[in-house]
Length: 197
Image (cartoon, rainbow, N blue to C red):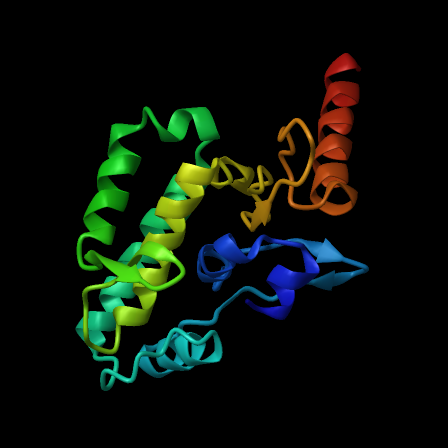
C-alpha cells in the first residue's frame, strides 16, 4: 500500500490495483497557475522492479527483462481500459473484457491451503514478474466482495486518474469534486451560457 492509496482510503484489498493503474499519470491541467506534469512511474524494467519491491511484490525471481516489462505494460493498459468503463458496462464490453483476459493470462494463479486461512490464491509464476499476480488476485477477490465496482477512472478527460468511490450510492464521477468536478461543471456552465447568447 502506498502513501497515496492510504491518503485516499483505498481498501488494502484493492491498493495494488489502484497503485498499479495510477503508475501512468496522464493528468493535463493547470492548478494555481502551474501545469501538472505528466509521468510514468514504470519508465523501464528497473523502475517496474523497484515499484514491485517498494510494495512487497518482489518475489526475488531474478531480473525483470524487457519482454516481462512489456507484459506488465499490457496488463496496466488493459486494466485502465477496464476501469474507464462504467461498472455496468464492464460486464458487457467484450473488447475490454477480452483485452483484460488476455493481459491476465501470463499471471496464472494456484489455490493453496493455508493453516488458519483456508484456501487462498497465489502466484503460479516463479520469475521476477510473479509479484504482479497480486493484481489478478485483487481483481478476483474484489469482484467476489463487490468492491471492484467502486474503483473507477475519473470522468474528466484532463485527468483519467483511478479513484475509489467511497460515496454511499457509489455514483461519483470524478476523483475529486473540488478539482475535476468543479472544472467540468464550470466548463459545462460556460458552454451553456455561450450557446444561450
